[in-house]
Image (cartoon, rainbow, N blue to C red; front, side, top):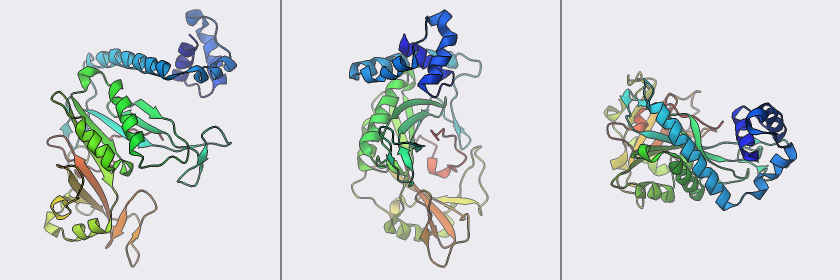
Length: 314
């Protein structure tokens, strides 16, 4: 019952155990006397793997009921529309890490790669319902390209999706997901009853730059906006250098999509790398690479990622 109080308090907006205790006082007529903040604080310390598994099953059971209610609405379940194409029965999972700043040296707090101090959790979000499916709490100095963490979060998030909605899964990951282990794991998730497709950002290398330079200007096409209409040529164009850049050792069927947009500021005399993400300014343009195995009829790299719906834990 203490955990029920805590879960409801978090749902009502509690951000600390003290606030959870205060909100619990308003629930006494339904759930009995509220637990003290010290009791709530001791609760996680008593958890073991079996209790965490039971909690995960309980969350999945509640989500199954809620998703059933969503599908019974007049407008139905919130399937996404990408580049003007309705992704019927595709559940979209976004995996991304975030930085949580800590003002004091708490357990797990450590220097972060952004030169701050705090935590670096990794979470999986359902873009259809904008809810958090799974979260892996990590220290501030946890690595970004840790395939083991990505696989663990992905596995838990798939367990949270009702079985009736697991037939078509689209996974979107930023550059931290461009690892052999994660791609191979995603490919192995495909079965006779389930299709798993994915798109990740790719860190541009010298080999990629050479391949991009070989793309004929006539091969560049306007990227698509969220409603399916094309961008102006001066804004954003895309091309596919897959045949020009064969990646040895990567999974078969992977496509490389590059997007070229004008830089946010004038490029200097020679190419240089931007501070944010893995973008490169070359010859007055900015390139961003995507690797994708996407749903039929949709090439995620052709859609402007800045307009695509992707909830984040930031």
